[in-house]
Image (cartoon, rainbow, N blue to C red; front, side, top):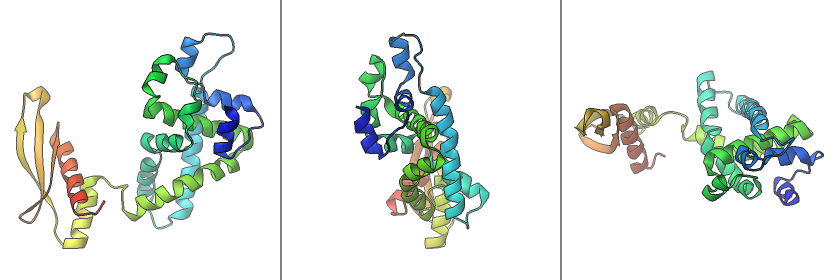
Length: 226
């Protein structure tokens, strides 16, 4: 099994025990007691920092026109759980994880896959150094990063919609509360975002801020700006 994963990774581990450790979820340890067994949590801790370094170094070198705040926002989108889980799925990492029966039945979930991917980065680093991690990681993050920057996806939906509405139509959007329903502890707000007299999008949420973000997201999609 390990050989199949190494083939998918394009990496041959000098210390196979590191790869085995990266694949061992804590639920497997709980259900399979035995001396000397460890989970991948420490490797995940290491891999998280390595991911931050490699992605930061890449963004700094690739996007000299972005400010420090913008670079931080791009990195946050780039290394979020959903993105890392997608990377894990691309190499079928879930097929190789050692998990307890409960986790196996649920398929591991996004967080488990993302954590295992970070642990894998930690294992690659310990086995072969930072250059190997960069070779493995950068071709995965580069197209996503360029798409994020090109479409300004690192901005929140309201900020992005305002920027694009002003650029494309010369109008500053504004938000109108349509309704609020339900008891105070479980209220739902409905908000529309307006461009002049036109309703550009509608959103719902437990508070006005969430509803406004949803309305802006709907407007971005309806106009093909996202």
